[in-house]
Image (tube, rainbow, N blue to C red; front, side):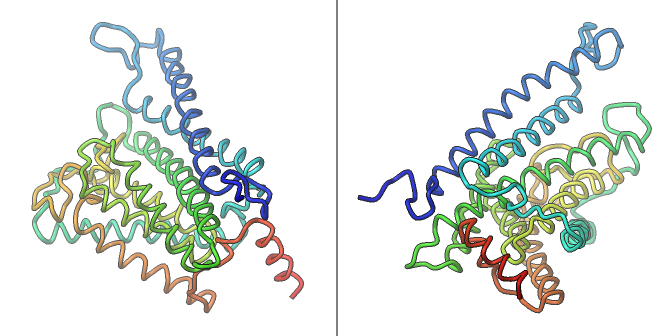
Length: 339
């Protein structure tokens, strides 16, 4: 009788349980850390006069609250993936697409450039169509800090978000789903494709609780997940997804002034805008990720990623080792080094 919990061939938990337990550890760890970090701003602000409410009681500003949440999520994501890798997956932390060599950093820079390019294209399409009006430049939001200081906070926030969301969604979930779906009847190629779609759908569903979210925004973010996953399934590295995610969010919110997944920009914006136009195309209050321009950007971005990978390696096929258990990937690496 087949064991529903353990894979006898791999001698570890089956993929479903690995993904579930890792996410439980992450989500609960994040809740605990958010509670702990949420107290820190109040302690820091006590007696300073900064961040007080109208009654004079110290309170954490939106910037502090967002920073606390992101910091807690980053720590919880890294810790949970490390623990899951150590005890469930039997793979090192670097095995989640994080081998920081020269190639990794080059692909990371490409991802940064691509995210900026795609969001700039969305902005200029809307501007040319008359759907947005520029109302100001270099403006801070809700504070009197200098612009150069105010813009640093969202930059740091989106660097952290880009890293931990890609580590969870692509590095851990997509990889484990591909391994779990790699049945003889499917094979590694079909397993990776199916895991790519499923992990992207889960990525979309996890944004359903955001302000102004809808069925359309969930579908659009699922498409964004497919775009972010393209670089991973073609290279086996998180470099392109992380870089793309960082600048996609930062340029969306703090360069061009759009809402980011339903959340208003934080800190400062290079350009302030007034949104108009048909919400079907612009995404309305949720931002571009809920409009039809998002799937268009996904198609263009995925094609550019494929062209980049093919131009550099001469191989634009799926990285089949993503669907192999750690031992298989280790043997592949050994054979490659001996060749």
